[in-house]
Image (cartoon, rainbow, N blue to C red; front, side, top):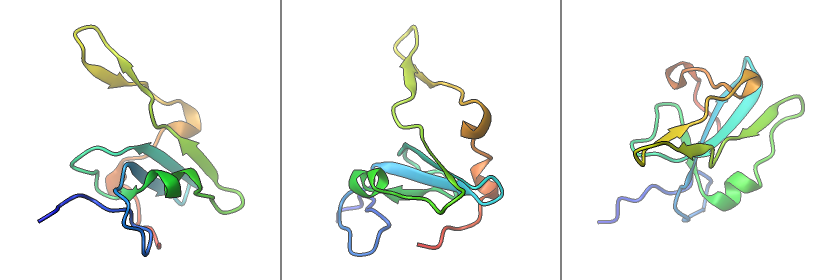
Length: 98
């Protein structure tokens, strides 16, 4: 049985490769590289749907994919986003109506 995660968009059978999170109070949507296990409150999207995602008027779309930087010893560490790019803890995000 294939257990790959699929895009959350209806009728899309492409694999999910991007994690979408959002915060109503900040009117912000974040797109991050998908990690397994996926964080609570994140939605998996395929690259095509993530790239074409539009947000409501007055909202910000922050694409943080590929922000990992190589560290000595071969480990990667994500750069710390500043200001509006800093996402709130995922456990406090309400579910997304798709």
